[in-house]
Figure 1: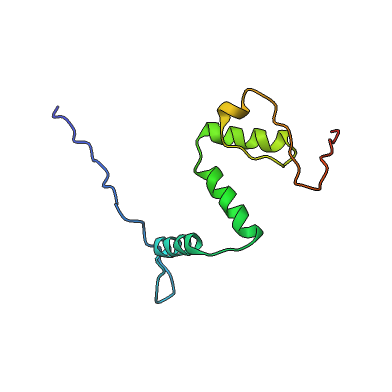
Figure 2: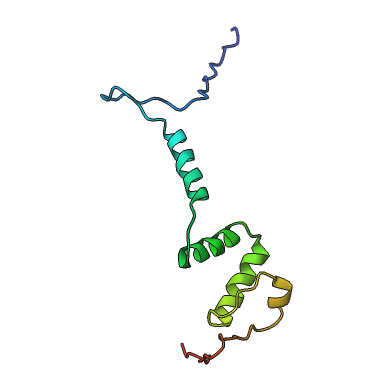
Length: 108
């Protein structure tokens, strides 16, 4: 009996195009790239800019830096944000309120 040949499926390198009743189709990859570019170039001010800065720092950080940020922020009741795990990991982070304010401890 001769050996049988196995059919190898062909792999498409492009996304499948779905049928549509619209005369034009949208390139969703291009649209996504354009939106990401606009978000990156967007100029924010005030709290929105500060939040974006912290979000970018956290997203681009390694695991130790993320751990340090979380630990320092939680232990200081939101008054300290450190990215150095060697400094934060071995001790408790004490809060430091802004000048003219008082730090209060909350019971959980």
